[in-house]
Image (cartoon, rainbow, N blue to C red; front, side, top):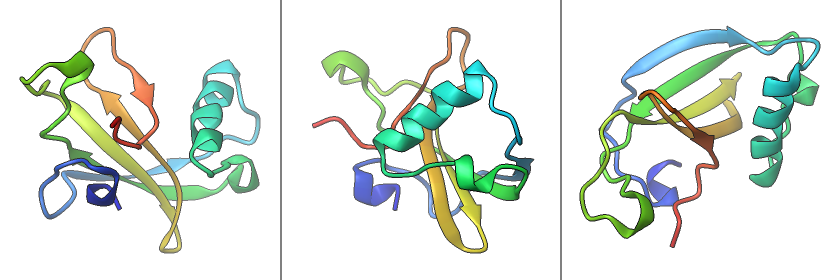
Length: 105
């Protein structure tokens, strides 16, 4: 799925964690769900569910037309019972960001 969005990753995930979607969304989770809605996902039906978060290192994230990829950029997939329910691209650096998984053209 990630490669189909134009991102380059290794063949397996770098990290697997289990997270719990909160029952009540604070402002941060509402903003995160807005990112999901832009991609056709919605985390609201999964409130109070525990889901798997697969994290992959992205090796071709070049912002603003740069030719040098940034380090510490990750794709995250949220999966429940083998079904993809959410995804994002995020930065592990200070001043981090979270955005849609779609690769900019």
